[in-house]
Structure formats: structure tokens, C-alpha cells
Image: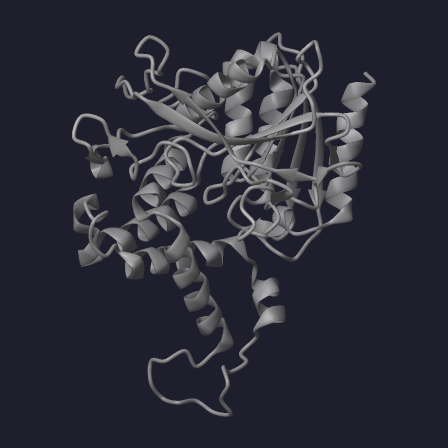
Length: 375
């Protein structure tokens, strides 16, 4: 199974979306990838929503980019006979609005100035991302979603889909996510943003024709990466092992393997991602709040009377979005009369556990989707 990246562009002033900020963004391009076939009723579709730094390349390898041989980020989950079976379902994954992986974002050209938007790009919300995905699904002829699935920030999108378009949703699987960021999560995001903005090469977001804030972006990624792991995962992988040394060098080089690892992850990320997109996406995640209906028009109360089924999944070692937050989501959904299943998976890999091949997760999701099919 191979795939190609596709693009949907809305350049009509009448159709292009009004953002929650009240500003209009036009044109808007959303990168997306599809797998399987849409049935004649348009109701066998599954939308997969990616996490903060992910993209639309959810599975398989590209057929039109032989230099890029990397499989998609959820390749173990999506494909023929896998947990999300593309022999049965028409699977869609869209790159989110504000990103830098093919969709319109701060690095895109502003038609008014013919230069990259930079900080002239309007603030976007999780709701804005969902509305842009809805336009793609309308274009593809999707009438109903068999399920909307996402982990982390993708889980926020899945929940937002349920309150914005409940009539379209048969089921939802939010994984390792939350109804709203805790103060701790907001704090980590703010430290990451400050790491970028204090880099002199950031230049108030105007760096696209000059060297960018690679150092600040690398530090931001290092901060984020720590939150995606767990104490046990880092102990098992690194402990206090030294990097190619038998003793301390008594300087500020990377003495420990974990230091070298974080520096490598940071520099690698700086080569593929846009610093301004980090600012916008993390802020959108911080604004998200379905618990108290703060700064949003939609809330979980809008699910009253809907008939979606939910499978909420958390991980024991996720300290970014810990299980107590998943349980709060379950309780909130039950208060609105939803059919909710919950599973906490024991794993010591931290927040990123849902991205690591695990037959338990594949079987859990596959069984749930099959149950919806036969209900």
C-alpha cells in the first residue's frame, strides 16, 4: 500500500472560513492523505487527527517521493487487516491549519504582502482546525464519520469534532488527551515558546529569508520531548550513562547520554519544523477548553441528545495528560448521556506510548470499531 499527499484549497471569499478570532483567512490550503475507498453512502470514513508536530502522513510510504522512504507515523495501526482496516474503512488524515507540513500556516505566503505571514498570520484554535477539516471531508463526499480518532492534540480535535458536528459522528476515540490544559501543560508550552522568541534569529517572527531561530526551536523541542517520555522510560534507556566517556569531562558538553539524545532530537526537529508554527499550535492547544466552555462557543453540553459512542484511552505513565484527566472526560461524557468505554493501558513509555507499536492498542481500537460496525 502506497499513498500520495493531496491538497484541498479554498480560495473563495464566500466559502473560506471565518476564524474564531473573527478574522477571515483566504486562501486556505489543507494537505491530506486518504486510504481505502469511500462507499456509496459516504459513511464508512474514519478521520485520524494528528498530534502537535505530526502531519497527514499517517501510514504507508509515498509512491511519488522515492527519496522519502519513511512510513507514516501510525503505520502499525492503519492499513489492510490492521486495527484501522483500510479494506473496510475510508481513512482520511489532514494536516492541521497553522502547521508547516503542507497546510496554510505562518510560513505561507500572505496574498496581501506576497511575503510569508509570520506573525501577521491570525491566531487559530482547535475549532478552526476542525472547521478546515470539515471542508476537506465535504469535498471528498464524506457524509458521516464512522469514527474520529486522535491522540494528544489530535484527541482535542476529535472531541471538538463531536461538539461541533455531532450529527456526523458515530463514534470517537480520544487517546492520551484532555478536555483542557492544566497549568503545568500551559507552563511547559510557554517555556517552549519563550525559548523560541528569545532567540535573536526569531526576529519577531520575520526570519523566512534569513537564518531562523534554530537554537531556540531546538531547545523548545527538548523541553517538549521530556514531557512526552516518562521517568521509567528515561531510566531504562539512559540512566546516568555517560556519552562516549569513562568519566566526567567537567565542562558543559553533553556528558550524559540523555543530554546528547535531547540535543539530537532538538536539532533534528529544527530542520523539519517551523518555529512560528510551534508558537501557533501550542497556543491553540492552551486555548482549548471543553470543560468550562471558556473562550469557545461549543462545549460537551452540546452532546445532549447525540448518540455517539466513545472509547477514551489513557496511559499509566502519561504525566502530561495523566489518567485523572481522562477519567474527568469520561465522567463529563456520561453526564451528557453518552455511551462511553474507558481503558487505561499500562505502559511505562509516557505520553508518546500511543505512537509506539502495541498490539493491545491495535486490538482495542479494531474491536471497538468493529463493534460500532455491528451495532
